[in-house]
Image (cartoon, rainbow, N blue to C red; front, side, top):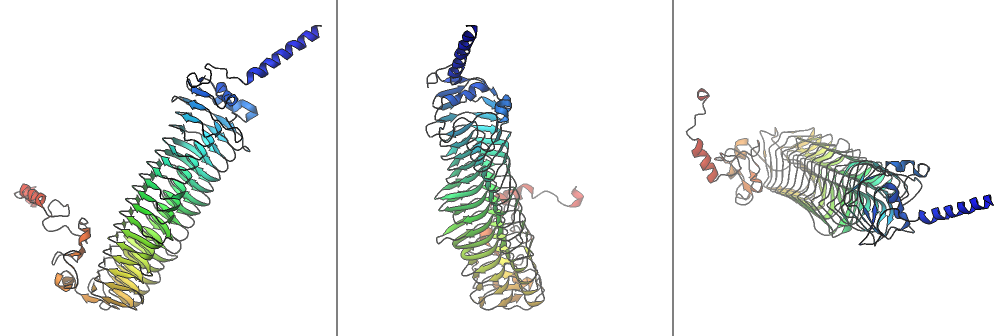
Length: 613
């Protein structure tokens, strides 16, 4: 009888435990007007028993103890693929610290494993999470069909396989006003400091370290929508392709990317960029974006974008150094390919050193193979080095069927194997250049070296080169070699020229026609050229030398007897040896106006002689 009584009591107790195990132990009724209030990690885990209820955090949650739960597996993610979380959680700005999950063979891992489309998650902060999973893993959610509001993660790490982010592994909707700071991510593909994959992204930030294989970004691994006001300071280390300081792979159509930037260093095997690694965005516009981190790649690489299918870009820049073991390398864009419409790159610049190990390397763009690529009002100032390949330029390495206007190269040195130019290495098939200049020195190991263009099969007009040129064969102060379909008119060069064969003060070899071109036969050290007219330095500084063919009203300007002709479009560019301040420009603002008269009258009685000191 005593044994029977004990057994009955045990059964009642067990039944009671089973019944209460699925109930929330805190206050509230789980409705919108009376949500469950979560105050400790156990109550946080109890969310799994009612995935469609209303919840709020009542205080900060210390969840470090979850490391000892479930034989070391830690916290059980809330919701999975079959039963996602479709409830509502208001974090009230409280912090969940030390959440621990170790489920290396499990998909959908995070505080929430999977979040359904009817859920809401707002104002949740995670600090120092420790999350390990398989596919679809993040500190807040592994997979989400909704955009969380004002959620963030700070510190800790996430380690998983594919679709992995510091905050969310994959989000199918837009994401805004979220960040992941100082988080370490280690994964394989589709990896980001904030999210592995998402659509549109607005007002989001990330920092820390992102490591993976391919399609990895400092902020997002893969983005299919527009982006605005986003930035990342995360370092990105990849072992495969499509690695970017902000986004690894940017896809979509007719999207916009505005006011975004990245500052972390980036490395990968191919299609690597300081902002985007790879961008396939027909009709998309990128404006007011920049990157400052160094970029390293085994192949295609760009300071801002590694590989780009055409779009419109304006007011963007990159200042990091770009290094590649191969070709298609640029200070701003590694390669621009395809396209049958007009695409624009305007008011952009690159200032980093560019080093390549193959063909098509440029200070701004390595390869411009696009039917309607128009580059205008751009410049590059970093040195360009490539001793292994051809088509190397201070601005563009290889340019094909497009226009370059009002742009210049200010690099100190541009070096390459063949087809090396201060502005463009190789102009192919109807490409055109107008109102451009280069002050870069050019050094070619082999042939086709020119102060502005190495090898020209297009059209060059109203441009000049002032850098020195050294090469072996087909060496010219302005262009190394002009092909049968190429032409050059109304241009001049002044730099010294040295080589072994086919050397000219203006061009080394000309298979076509050129007209109204001049070179300085004193500073160049060359008295002959394949084409053009040699003049003394004194003659080169006289407007009459170039008239009547040159337009000194709208295109060219000259300080008679003081300077070579300069392009009026660069009137604001002055103060260097090639663009002296205008006579009367007392305040050195590159123009002569009433402010200069005021400056003169203010100081005209001052004594500037040594004895006045």
